[in-house]
Amino acid sequence: MKNPHRLVGIVIMGAVMLGASGKLWSQSTPSTSTAEDLPPWYVSIGGGYIRYEGDEATKNGGFGLLRLGYDYTPRWTFRGEFSYFPELKANTVYNYETGVPVPRPGLHGDSTWAVGLAGDALFHFIATDDRRWDPYLVGGLGLLHYEKMREWRSQTDVPIRAGIGLAYHFTPEWAVNVDLMEQMTIDKLEFNFIPGAGVSWSPAGRKPARSAGLALVAPGDHAAESTQASAPPSPPPADLQMFKLDMNSAEGKWHEYFSELDAIAKIIQTYPDSEILIEGYLDQQPNISERDARKLTEKRAEAIRDYFVQNHHIAKKRITAVGYGFSRQKAPNDPVNGNPENQRMEIHIRAARTAP
Picture 1: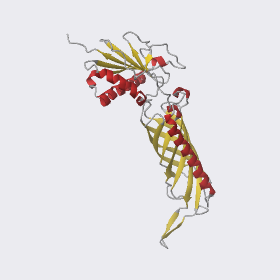
Picture 2: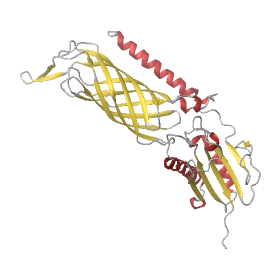
Picture 3: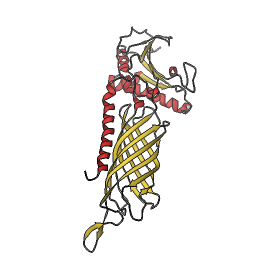
Picture 4: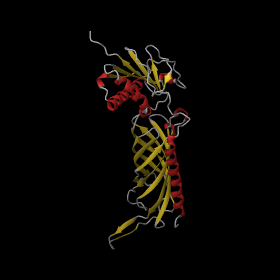
């Protein structure tokens, strides 16, 4: 091969993609660890395109990228990026005397390859745990090293990076993202447009097989044994039946509770005159205000209500969704490790109130 470095780059990117696809296929095997055991790291692979300002010695070109990110808080993420530009051809300039383009002075050769490193901070506009659409701002610094020397320029650029991005989380583990960024070289103050897109995988999204996530609680009894969601419960009393979804993580990914919600919906449908109350509770956390906690738990309660309405055609007027946030906690708060007893969703099925 004319340029061995290209073969090395292709092998590296192929290995990364093969490893990522292996992780995708391995999702069918239940994990023995919970999301709480795994730090919120993620890895992303993708590509992009660099569009130079116009008077650079190199033409526009494509690149591949590999990112490693860490979700520091729901609002802030830090990530590192490695990018590889396999071929950036020499730029040309139009010669008005001959009428044909000629190579622009500056690059020692017909083309060059380049590698880049960058560190970015992401500010997320939406901080809820159960977000699917995730818009954010990006800012950071980078290094871009060219294989060949460029006249009047350093062989390595130091750009300042800024832009906007949008991610879509379609499973707890997988997401796609698009970044629209500009980078300004510090020495020449030239702005280059670098859009990119990628696919991300997060091990923190993995969950163990759920075998007892639903609890059936009799009136006044909040300590009943957990039962299998698929097992038919005993007939409820006329006044109240309560179910509890154990929210032992802050993920809020409702597709993991579909089987439990389907079982509850069948019970609701056997009592067409009943009323349903959905209550959300959150374990107290130092980085979430009481107001935000109430909004988050209310959103989760409304998500369950909407699931019953859209998937099981239960009348919306029968359902009341309420978020209590940190209030009405069942167990003492642990500010360090938290207390999962306080993070839960309760679904009450009640006899319809008769008019006086």
